[in-house]
Amino acid sequence: MSTDAEDPLDEVDTESVTSDDVTEAEVHEALSSASPVTRRRGVEVCESFAESDVDAVRPYLDDLAALVGGDNSGIALRAISVLDTVADAEPAALEGRVASLAAVADDDIVDVQLTAGVALGKVVVERADLVAPFVERLIAGVRETELDEGIPEVPDAVDDRATRQTIREHEEQERSRRLSARRTLSNVVVAVTQETPDEAVDAVGDLVTLLDDRDPEVAGCAVDALGELAEPHPEAVAPVSEALLDCLDHDRSSVRARAIRALGRLGDDDAVPTLRAMAEEDDDENVRELAAETADYLADAA
Image (cartoon, rainbow, N blue to C red; front, side, top):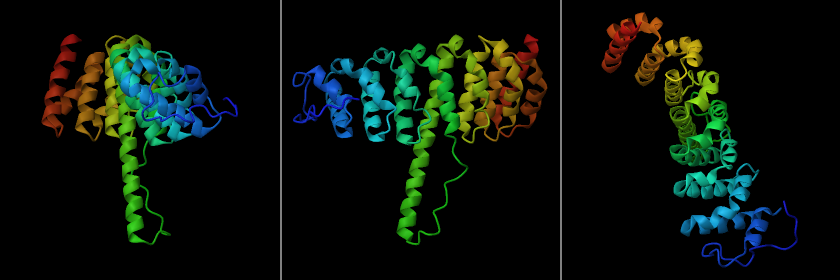
């Protein structure tokens, strides 16, 4: 980063600045400054540009991407926010910058993980190919931020009831955002397997590690992703079919149903006896019907 003594953009009103008010050199210098205050000012200028004209931010996208993984979470969040605005308007503009968003998929700061996931979700809709090279990194981020079974107990040393309640509420909100972040990233992974299965096929082994995730929505997304890969690449998914079969015993009916669909797409007739039993015994009527239909389909295909 620059260590120049001058403080670029020091006199700028970052809330009303336009691209005509400053030079590109000044903004670049601010974004690469050794001073967090100056870097933050540079990002705020980019935020103002993005609100009125996304094209005005183009010269600074590399600088902003470099700030995403920095040690200042406040600056990182604002940099991601600008990239998210760009993704809204033109996802292709983030080509070459997606790696920085994928790199924070396991960030300790939940809002960094969540905001990056939201931006990736916008990119993947139109340009899944830009996200595909990082699908294994996204899966690792989801896996490494798996939540504990419950909210941690407030330490006994905290005696004040109001303080204990405040801490509890904070923990609940943090947990809720982490759930949202992990689910967002999981859905991004599913979208990649739908749109670019050839590029995601190497992630089969990584996806299996999410099948027993504590969050049934994450587990369900992993099942869906394997199902998306099963038709174009059955040779890659067949070796992990036992893991999909295990999902037929999942506590959540939604995961069981998704596993049935994935096995159907895989064409695994070894699943027929289990599916026949589910068609008779499962607690969920919709699952029973789906199991019966899929068992018939697989038996006929065999």
